[in-house]
Amino acid sequence: MIEIIRVKDYETMSLYAARLVAAQVRLVPDSVLGLATGSTPLGMYRELVRQHREEGLDFSQVTTINLDEYCGLPGTNEQSYRYYMDSNFFSKINIDPDLTFIPDGMTTDIDACCEMYDELIDFLGGTDIQVLGVGENGHIAFNEPHGYCFTAKTHKAELTENTMEVNSRFFDDPAEIPRYAISMGMRGIMSSKCFLIMISGAQKADAGYGLLRGEVTPRCPVSILQLHPNVKLIVTDDAFGKIKD
Image (cartoon, rainbow, N blue to C red; front, side, top):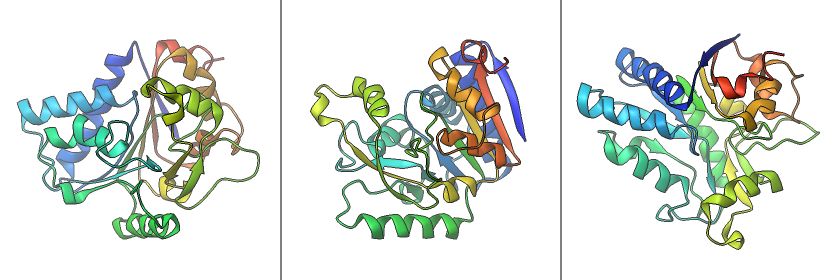
């Protein structure tokens, strides 16, 4: 079941999402949070930091597990997702760094790294709530669209030209844009008890339509969420136009 929560703009979407995550943490202090990166969840992270500082929201028992990481970027690189999470969220709250998990983009054994990540997800019992954004082409994590089948396990993913073009704004030199990433697979993603997916901007309208109205197909990876019983979609007005058709 997908519950649609329509909001007027990005700020409202971010506040709504933060309140849902905060409620989960307050109700279950040792929650396992599945986290995402990119521009979509930044406002949510800012509001969670504010709630921690001003309202005492406590992350001391929380475990987090992220969806993906670029191959070849160390955690000190400003474009790595480890750096993103540390600078935008983890360093500003009272979370135990040892309980924040992100794939190792510098691993010399990607297969072993992927296997260990899946074992970690199984050990944690999946996430209590999984925060998701969606790419313009419908990808979630770095599960890119293709015509074959959904990839179940954590894996080395080759980024599509569309994804690389969208990500190019974060890199000064196009040659620096990673072509590969370690991405959680669909089995790990779908093991979450609840999804919180945010869609903002007219450029994401097609992906939103695929989530709600399209067939379940690896050509639109986000469509797999139609098979999950507990999905909350927060969508802004500018992304809602095509979805309602």
